Length: 346
Image 1 (cartoon, rainbow, N blue to C red):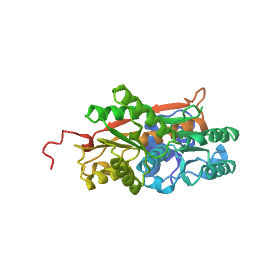
Image 2 (tube, rainbow, N blue to C red; image 1 turned 90 degrees about the vertical axis):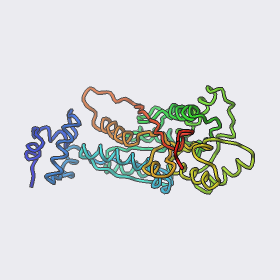
Image 3 (cartoon, one colour; image 1 turned 135 degrees about the horizontal axis):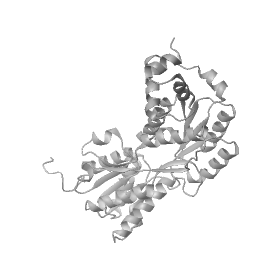
Image 4 (cartoon, rainbow, N blue to C red; image 1 turned 90 degrees about the horizontal axis):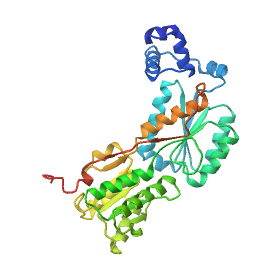
């Protein structure tokens, strides 16, 4: 059976360094942590988690949790990419990861508090929390002294969070469509109770106003991610004489429904209607035409959320944890917005 000394020899570090990596103590670089993790994996070394938790009074386990319809989560690659980011970072720190989905916020809070009180987890990473629930989330975390990080905008709430600037991202996306020659951008919004959606509407409005265009609220349209709802919504708009030359959706799945609608109804993409979505997904460049998107880099959101949570669970000496970290997003241009550029395309 491999020992810590064996791991240290293979990784080219001291046994003390291996111990610090395993117990998440002291300062070690990501490169050293990766070397130790690789050596442990190659030698099939499994630390005694129970003994570690007793000596450190920690479980070496955190929980990534969401209160949302499971169908929406499992069909959305954003959440799986965030999960991968957390998982990859947790592996480097020799941490275990739980993933919990709840139908309601109330159920989520009750379970999280119970898990922490029973010392089954050291902290939580939350995402997709509705605006109306953030006060209660903050109160519970402070009341029970639970380490936590929120992935998503914290608005006016003084919370530990990792997020994108959704106002900036939506402004950037709208400006991008304007620069491509589109002028009647349809923004499909599923739920204004989420800060992320509220912010994206704000960014859209700002870009339209700055472009000197008339801001029509008929182009900010409530619509769920259900395909039949999207079809019905677009049919109703066209029947009412509301014209549009581009569609912005809040997620990648809905963009495929928009693409299918256009193809079914003889609307050429991108010549007559451009399509742009928030959140990237592997299938977006597999369809024809491929779909442009705003990529918020969810893997990085997940890994940075884990690092922040570790700093809260076991703060480095003399350190101050930054309460809010803003990460960049990028536009990935594909065929669905290349108006007038697809020369030679069938």
